[in-house]
Image (cartoon, rainbow, N blue to C red; front, top):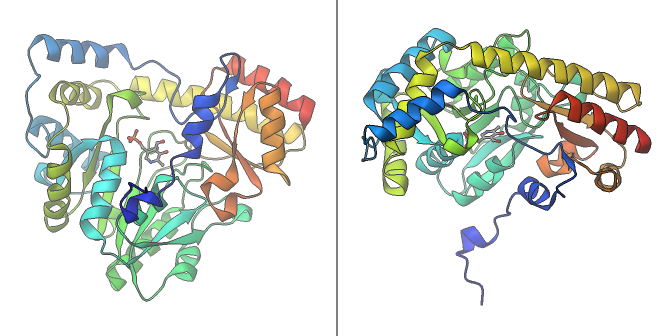
Length: 370
Ligand SMILES: Cc1ncc(COP(=O)(O)O)c(C=O)c1O
């Protein structure tokens, strides 16, 4: 008997997670989608204090008012987005923000543009809403940066929304300001909603991050604490948009999770309002690792561009599946790029969320099979 509801039984579980779960204890795992750094001490202390002070009861459905106030301030300061604290919902990671927004705004049979290559969840969230995902193909020649032309090529008469992700998982690409502005204008003109996944906003090297919501009201900004503050397991994200959109998203959020846990929201408030040196230090370290990996791969003849953000390198290979299998035999775990869409089929994703020494050792191992 097939127990799954029709719209659920066709959904795929994450291939990347499977890879991660199969990794042997001696392997150097370069398939990770999370910072290897510890959560900064002051955030942990704040969480402990919150628990000691019995912050263990429900919060408002949208989230703790003080945290939402500080998220609104952050959006104004960093992203030039003007929203009130009522236009913010604190969610179970960026994952829930993404899922709840898509469920709330997308009808069955709508077309939703998603990046190719792109993060695995987008296609499945769109499918769970009964809608169709249409790939926006970015090209390796352009360092996989999505352009206005890429979006225009993918548009269909039934396009209701698009998901965009900059800095990007799996490519590390950071989009140009001109493209962000032009796509935002197109969204306004054509009544298309942009789900802008900005979870890697802070992990960016020498470039400035721009947000769609700065230039259009038709945007839902999705962000969170997982990557910037190395707290993936504490599960806090958020979305912000105009009041009419937030009202709809709140319905899905409320009947799914009611609210996220209160003590962790206190810790997130501390993360936002205290020194951001921990974020800068982590990003500086990531940059050193990126340089090591890109230079080593290029020296081995494995072609890749220098990505401007996130902690992934997406390198070219004619036979990715075979190379990934050979790498497993050398105790290095990688992910074949085909897992991220058609455009990734000749690429391999390498996450450098591993110590510098481990990365050096992994490069020595890969050199043997390159
Ligand atoms: C592009 C992208 N968006 C969203 C997420 C989910 O983040 P969170 O841990 O906040 O749910 C990830 C996690 O890997 C990601 O890579």
